[in-house]
Length: 184
Image (cartoon, one colour):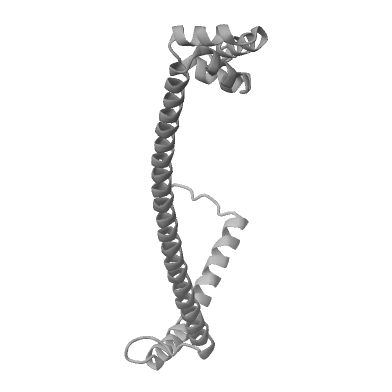
């Protein structure tokens, strides 16, 4: 004969607790199912209960706030588009003004160069002592510009008629013009 193993006290207590829980669930589950049936029959045909008024108002306020935010964003976007168009117009205007200024500066440079060339030709055509008398009245840095543009023979003849200190100052100015220019 096989002998059964004895059941311990703890095992018996655990089984009794499980049995007690199952009985309670069984007796109270019927009542819970009955009350759920009443709740289901109280629902409208579409299956949704009426939303509470506070929830409805809150949702309407959120919808209004969202619409206001959307309108604000649209207004901001329109303002940004207008500002961007204004900036583009100003940039186009500045580019046009820059092109016009560059053209004017080029014209002035050509005109100034033409004026200097005419004066250089005029001084070269003068007798050396007459040209030297005019150049003596000029600051050395200004006179150096004219003498540097002259033909070497005409410039040498005029420098020879100048006071040696003035001739030296003009020569030093011509020699030192590019001394501070970068070499690389």
